[in-house]
Every structure is written in structure tokens, then in C-alpha cells.
Image (cartoon, rainbow, N blue to C red):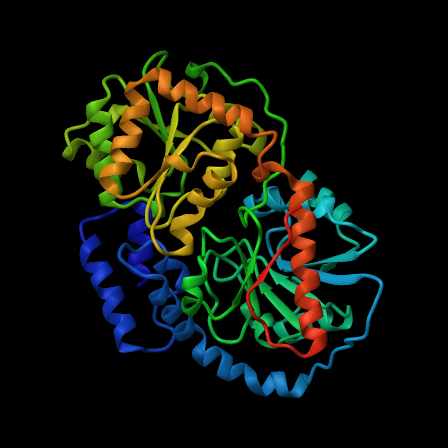
Length: 453
């Protein structure tokens, strides 16, 4: 499975079909700890149910191994009524990171009279502006980077956290070992990992009705905690003026298809569709995120599909503000599948660029669709691959329709829920309050719905 991850980062697709078959066989053998759940998110053909199986297998031995330490620690909880709910956020991304950019305005908008926010950081302090802003947003900032899992869990318990919110899941640098020790009475899976953690690690997953319809409950070990619109927060970062196209390597004329998803999310099937769109749209280019590992392979794949390699333009990493400036130059964002755009999708919509997506049945494949619903553009959610190409091609070849979509997006951004951080924070607070009330009453977790704000 390690080679699958390396090949995906390089867009080396010679053994793509075989590696996907190997992943399915490994799941069928039900061996513990064989496939990292994050890796499976980008493997085509996997259902949400298979993602749960993968998470359960990944954690089975780890949960068993942690049981003795959990018994030794024997955490007990104070469930008495208090003036302020104590909510702890666990992450190593409290710096200039996509998760922090998504969440910061919602954190700042929390009602400090009702909720006391604690950060538990196991990442490096980069001394940057986002780190300082996060420090100000939390009531207390606990640096647990130097602590082992037991000591970090003890720190969470000592702070008397009522609701512990994990922002990592199975993404890089995660420490689910802390959660396995259950240092808080309520534990929540949120934002960082688009899927279930399996086992009894978390009680709830924060989601929305599009990303995880109620009928999908069996595919998740957590109970659904539904936000009223999209589960994903996003603030209203100031948009500077776009640069000239030449400044970012784009030709002076021609349609700009764009996808700034990481290379591991790209698949040969999706790339086939993109090349069909390039072939059908004269003078168009495909604007992708730069990757030293993948660029050569992607140019070769384009050539094999009859597309001139020079029509692929690669964009280097930039600060968030500079990235949002250049993103405004894109005409249309094309989503990947089965692991679609998340932060990159909401960034595009904030920058005024429509996105075409094709939703599957997994959390990771449905995020862009959730965002489009929340911003009032559900017609850009394609029913299947043929519809995906048809919608994108229509927008690329009929300028009036594209401009109408962009104008609608501009009108909707200030008034639809997607970019209303204050309303988002109120709904999130409502979910935390409901979780806490159920816990105090002795009721088991069950699906809950935030009030609309």
C-alpha cells in the first residue's frame, strides 16, 4: 500500500488499476492495519461502507492495545451544570494551514459568554500571524507537542474539557492515540478527515445532510451531528485585485480550466475527462497545482491523450492571500473524484469561480456538492461523468452562461450561508450544547440537528 501512496503523489498510473484491485483484496482479507484509511479515500470504486471497514481494521489492534492504559488512567468526568461549556480542539495544524484558514473566523465568532475554547496543539509553533491569531481566539492554548499520548490525554482531562473536537482524523501527523484514551466525556470528529474514524473513538461527526444523508448512518461509527447548511466553515478573507495573467504563467487569451487539488487526488479517469474538455475547447489551458514529482508524468499523460503538454500550466505554492488573488483568473474549476475538492472548492467559490463536481456516495466525494448547495448553485453538481463533461463544456463554450453563473455567485456570496462565519459559529455551538445535554442526561449519542441561525 505504500507504493500506492507514492505512485499517486507522482501521478504514476501504469499500475493504477492493479493497485486499486489490491486495495479491495486487502480489505476482503480483513487483516488489521494494512491500509491507511486516508489512502483509501482517493481509490475509485470504494464505497462509504468500505471506508468504514478500512478504518475499523486500521484501528482494531490499536484500540485493543490502548485498553490497559485507558483502564489505568480511569478518567472520571464532572457532569455538573456550568456557566460555560469547555470545548477543546485537538490538532497539529494551528499555524498557516488550510484547516486553520477555514476555521479561524468561526472560532473568533464563538460566544465567549457561553463557551470556553481550548486548543491542544501537538504541532510546531511557526511564530506566524495565523498562530498568533489562533492564540487570541482560544481561552487557553495548550502545547502538548512534547507529551506522549497518555500525558496529552491527561492534560485534556485536567482542563476539564467537556467536548473534545479532533481536527486530524487519519491525516498526516494525526494522534488518534490520544482520543483512544477517552480524556473527555464527548469526542467529536470534525473537518480534518472526511470520513469515519471507526471503533468507539468519537461519539459524533460534524457533517451536513448532503455530505452524509441519514441513510448513510451505517457507514459511520459516529452519530451524525448535522449543520443546517454545509459542514465546512469559511470566512470572508479580503480579496485583493487579481494579477495579470502573464504574472502567473497563463496565456493572455483562452479559457482557463483549473484544479488546485493535490496530485494524489488526480486519477486517470478524471484526467481523461479533462483532456476531452481541452480538446473540445480550442486555446484552453488546464491550470494545476505545481508538483515536482507529478508534473512530468502529467505532461506525458496529456500527450498520450492527444493534448499538447504545454497546455498544462502549473501554479506554485503561495500564501493564502496571494493564492486567492490569482485564483480569480480561473474561468472554471474542475473537481476530482472520488476524493474531491474541499478547501480548494470553497476558496474558488469565495474567489468568484464556479466549480463543476460529480458527487459519489462517500464523504470525500460530496464536499464540493455540499458547498454548491450552500452557495445556491446546485445545478453545477453533475449526475455522472457524461453530465460532468456536458456541464463543463457548456460553460466553457457559451460565455453568456458562464458569466451568468459568475454573476449569480457574486450575488449569492454575501447572503447565502456558506460564508457567514457568525451564523456558522452559532449553529456549531448549538450542536456542542446538544451533545453535552445528551451526555449529562446519560443518553447515548444519536443524530442531532443544529438550529438554523
